[in-house]
Image 1 (cartoon, helix red, strand yellow):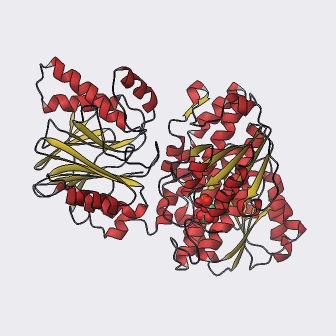
Image 2 (cartoon, protein in one colour; image 1 turned 60 degrees about the horizontal axis):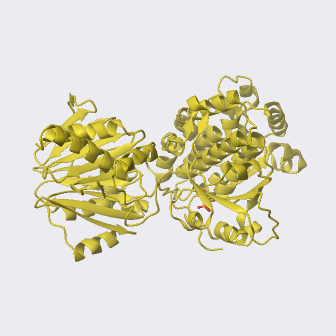
Image 3 (cartoon, helix red, strand yellow; image 1 turned 180 degrees about the vertical axis):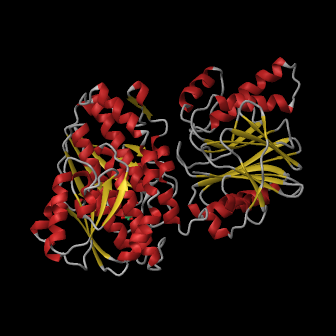
Length: 620
Ligand code: F6R
């Protein structure tokens, strides 16, 4: 989720790289850095905070040279600090690396490298790449009596990358080759920009705007060897691959949205990838094991008597879903609290309790205040958060990161599914340690978890159909969203999404509550959106739909593929994959996000910045 730029040519590398980084800055990165190679020396500048801090740093200590790499960081491993900012170097400071992605097996690789006397200065996963290259490069040189051939260096890079599990987009420089920029990618995008007697690399096209009109998209597990007059691409086995360049015709704002009309739509569509990132390196079905970087001892988990989940808005809805999983998989009694209410109540905690604070931003004033009041008690706290180094993560005892990347649209979408995944992983983890899950169940859930990106991708294909349905319902001013069990919070979330971005009044209700009041509202002007995917409560919610239909209500149903009978009950049916019940909330929220999006877009609303709302609610 970071930004990368690289340059080789005749221009001022630091100026070009800084401009490229500035074009990516809108995403709210937390630190940045540059490395420039000149007169046989590699020089680095790194700064925490905005790019303007890096600019000032470079103004005070200029960098001259015509080849370099730059990076804006959105922290995943290690807090935002100068040491953790990229570029990272090897022990000899001859190799520099900028990296986007996550190296999943970095801790085991790091342990091996430390045994071989490599010195690490950061907490990042990236730093191991520089040391792995160094290790292979030194060996190559030893075997060729100190001869430094470019071919051997590329071999060393390939050898290093073949040891890395996970995702990467990389820019690499080595002092021994002052005209060579190496790029590589796996599961993270990387483009090569073509210029006249100059070439570029970038993680995102906006970084290249105004610099290059032709680009080459690097494919999976490819390495590019970039010089000012040439670009050659190879696969990880060293075989040359022919690449075609394409013209880019994007205005800067459009390019930042990767050609989507709004950031919100981009972020909705990104979810298969962000879910994958939340799961990455944490789920091992073949070993029936999860590896979560949580500082909660097995003894504490075994003795756990109660969990309280505290959050606001969309994060509160995630907490409501999480409660089902924590109760059913880990068998721990749970309560869910809205932070702004909870902070003014009386509290009673014991040391056998865990309080979980959920926040995308980690800066929500009410959630932070609720966390602070727990400090008076001997109770453990856990943050589920998307922003590394945010206040919540600094003040909680331990943090589980959702790793969804910066969310720009004010309405939370990908961060919500990230929170759901985090809660599900936590519930499974507790269930395993508390021995409430047998091996077969663990294996099945973990294997199914890895299917989630696919199920979500399928749900996203409904976008056009949802747009058509939205047109039909555009004149309606009120909506009722109904769900039961784990899909009741999804009904709340669907209603919240619709009201916050389209300004249409919407209520989310547990379907069983209809007959206790809200059914009085039903008429042809009050459509219902009902979550009726296959589940324990399927028949019950069908009855609730019948009751609404009998009173003239119009129903849009979200149902499981293969369910034909629902067509007789509902006016419109949106089919999602038939998934095991515990995953249905994660899949079912997708059509509701798309429905809110299309309604708001068709109404001409400012989707990304809805009126009266802010992305981080830092005031009470
Ligand atoms: C709605 C939305 C908000 C946030 C709420 C809490 O789409 O984004 O309801 O969920 O303001 O924010 P965080 O999660 O940053 O604490």
